[in-house]
Length: 319
Image 1 (tube, rainbow, N blue to C red):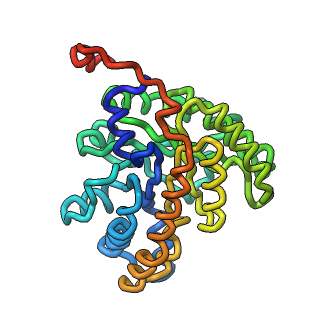
Image 2: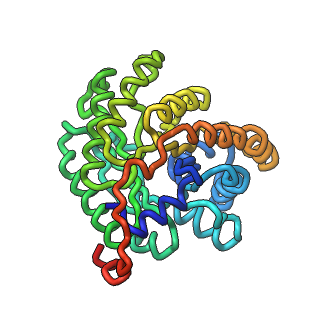
């Protein structure tokens, strides 16, 4: 059952039509390293990059996925974090220098679901590297279950992002990748995630056949009992736009997109040039994705909402 707090929060994170067009800029270590390839980066520069993206792109998004240290805190203090769009906040630190099988859950120090709720954010995001045959699969499931329990306690929705990988030295085959993406979505939806933030279920480096795409997306939608949204996973914008259109035509409730929208801005150390690109190119991408997302399945069509009784407030704490 989707509880009152979760209903309110999911409404805040979606468009009036019930679609997610979420701007993701919660990136930390990997974004810092990418910026450092083009200029000297310090805390002020890093925060300014996030500020520029949010100021120029958030007017066209339904929500923002933003980290607490370099995004939310300075944005609240300086007033550039908008209050008219939803706010998702991550729980985890991710070390991309490690093999995915070694990337266990590492929470942001001194951060928690309770603090995300207390802050006034609308949703929690949890990324877990996962493969159903990996040695740590049960551990990752247990972590997800614990976070689901915390989110239930604070009545805040969980957007869970399972990133699949090969548990062996050999890369995943095309069918192995598809099966792993589908099984991860099913597993974490069944554990209790409110929205699955999923990879595209076809490795597009091996297949550009949109008939195959649609078949895999329909299978994902049939199997996943919760709303799901497509992540960009570093794809170029032209590819991601096609993926998003196919996903929304086959059951997705929208997208949660970062680098596919703003990646070229990383290469621009000059603030004026960066803002011009964000304003004149990247904002158009967010608007285009908003139109694409409007063709998707409204998230309310995939949740169970129990009618409120006239005395629902009396038992709300125990729902």
